[in-house]
Amino acid sequence: MSEELSREDLQAALGVRQEMGAEIEPALVDSLARKIEATVERRFQAEMVASKAEADAARAGQGGRLAVGIVSLVMAIPLTAIAGGMSGFLGMLLVWVGIVAVNVAMAIRRPHA
Image (cartoon, rainbow, N blue to C red; front, side, top):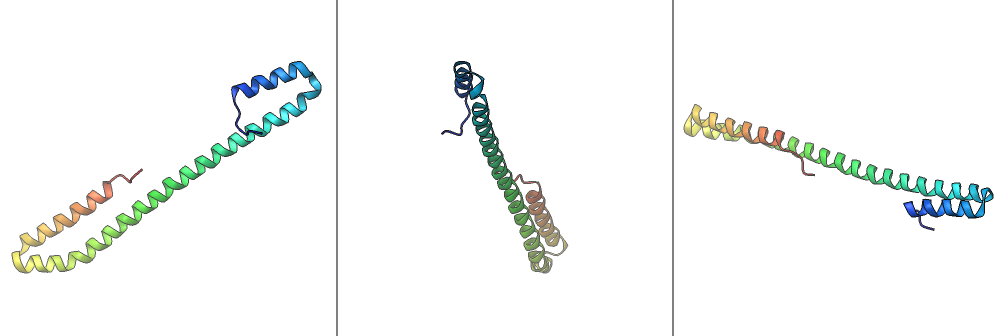
């Protein structure tokens, strides 16, 4: 028995009800109720899977942002020292502008769908 509910199923159930009379009605109602429940359950499960996938993608995006932030701060120390030693304040300023730009770009980036 198919668990998909269609317009034809409903029309067939009404036709059977008209031909067989009221004594068949409880069985028809039970059959239609099972199909409706199965359809709702299947749609609910599909929605839950999609919702979980979206939540996992959001968490993965947050993890990537955190990793970029940590790596940026770790790399900022030697880059600042090197730039400061070679170019002075302007070199350090350029390093920090680059670090801030990378982190801002990562923060405003949209997660992949």
